[in-house]
Length: 78
Image (tube, rainbow, N blue to C red; front, side, top):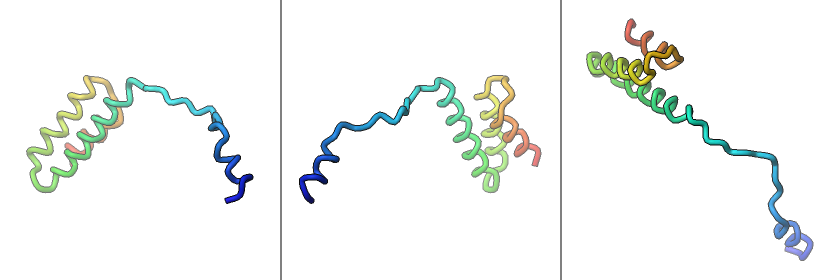
């Protein structure tokens, strides 16, 4: 490397305007998604346990209508 190449590496990091915010709603969505996919994995081997697990997805939603609850209900009736 020449001295000119070293100069650009020593410059301060540029600010690209990225801001990381902590969304309080993100964790429950991840929990719901994980519960849904775990339930779906149970479906073939243990259908009764899968039904209980899909019910837990609905319980985690707390009575609110949402994507994962809808998908869980859809899987429960299949």
